[in-house]
Image (cartoon, rainbow, N blue to C red):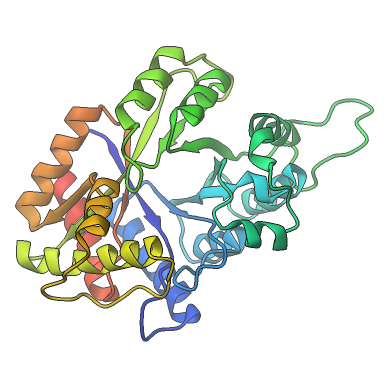
Length: 324
């Protein structure tokens, strides 16, 4: 049976504050730990008023300090925004504070717009150096060589699990070549999912970090006591995607009964959210089972932003019950 994990976008919902979003993330992680989820990831997004995890390593520290056993990590750190040495130092520090529990997922996209990239002081062509930067970063985690002038402190020799993230075939090829676990962003960009899985598994080269290919897939799950209630809660995600595509991102909207969207926008959202399971316990159980059977996923990274935090926690409870 596939392992089950959570990707939390630390949502700042309409009518709430960033502090409340961060408190809710910790509360959700504690529930996830009690429910048996394997890992809890947060993602780097910048210039997004509805997401509170821009300083991803800081939020990971907040969540890891408030939990005991669940793995906590980044899904992911957008490496073009950072010097590899600084990432190694940050996650090396996390690994010292929370040994055996820290994951580092690495993404090639900037996670923001070009104007914000300039504000981050990064080269706009940074994605082109992604493979080199990943290799450099992995090197900082190795024990220092004799005579090595620059050492990641903390970082060298740290026990950090490194992942390659992706939504295209590029990440699949890189993860396979480096012998790293691979996480595909099927929860918002599912088009190349099956091809990426095939390429990764066929081309995988064993490494000291991983002997066999390991695939984790993103899946939107919105679960509630009834199908109709779940569909209502799902309208918050649909509205958020519509606002983003229309160039007006904001806080996570309240659910809206009878939501009507422009047909072209609605079609695009349906394609982006094709890997979604929305419904009551029975429907979620069947949907998760079908997704695992179709993809052969080793692990699912469940995401599902719901405006009401208590209902969000309940959704993840139902998801955990469905796979048990």
